[in-house]
Length: 407
Image (cartoon, rainbow, N blue to C red; front, side, top):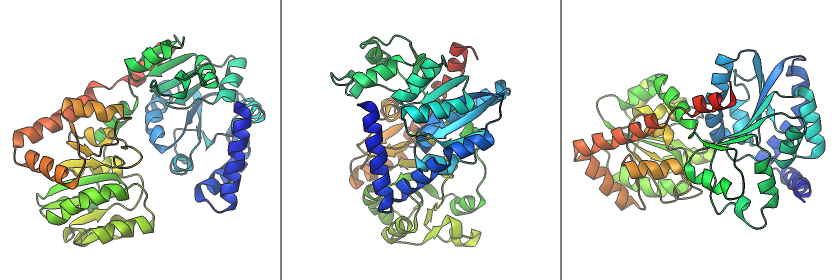
């Protein structure tokens, strides 16, 4: 039944591609090239570690492990696979991986062919990756496989009466390194005992980004002069409906917006909602940004750096599919805001609990909380310290995993 479901999914992707769906087209193109790429780049006789990551966000969780592996075990090469076009397209030139490609669909034939090419010494699946046929193939070859930074909740399929295939997948891991004790309790409730609580490897990543954050002259020209700066990251249309009215009323703030998608239509939508001078990062000069009230970052890869320029930050997704990565902003020691859809983010919950983040449900709520912090310098400082302290206090997951598996 599981494999039949995979074939059904493949058929749906092909249908979507036929009708011009961009991500489906990109995925199929990448899949057609997988084995050619592997054949060209895998070096016979070399030992490989395999990292599988679903998307760009999960890539940030996998990077600390890859970087540590390459630094401490240069004899091991790395194969990095993605499921999502958004992850692959951004990371396809990642220099610390010897091979970057899509993961072939999880059919038994693809599994045999894929593993035959480079026969990894070990495999790491980042967070929510539980591909049954790949796990069975690895187990059959006695290749150790680990789940890292995973989170489990009682409403997931693994813990339902009909979740047999999911439970089988979990039992095939040599070890699961989870983020919290609740996840460990859930796994043990179904007899999965090879579990350790080590935290989230993303903390290691965001700390390194903050420590090595490069300067962005255009952004620095925009924020110069002591203006209050608010950074909005991963912004969706539903987020803009909440925060834009506030910034249209409060021009004493300078606003930096990083949309979740940076196509021209989305950028124009943001521009149309701001009642003032907007400039796009890719087209702006130093003089342009000095006269503007809103700077739109219309390219990928800068959000984690841009947060450093904010007095406060808002992370999008909380009025739609769920709040995005709140750790990147908190790493700079700034108070973080987000919408009500944040229950699935453990980091968001913990930041709220420690006083480093605030959930807002409306423009009025945002205005009230911002005013409270601006009018109380001590409260603002305490919120920023709480956010930064939460990040620093949860670092070290990568080192714990390496120690546990003997690397």
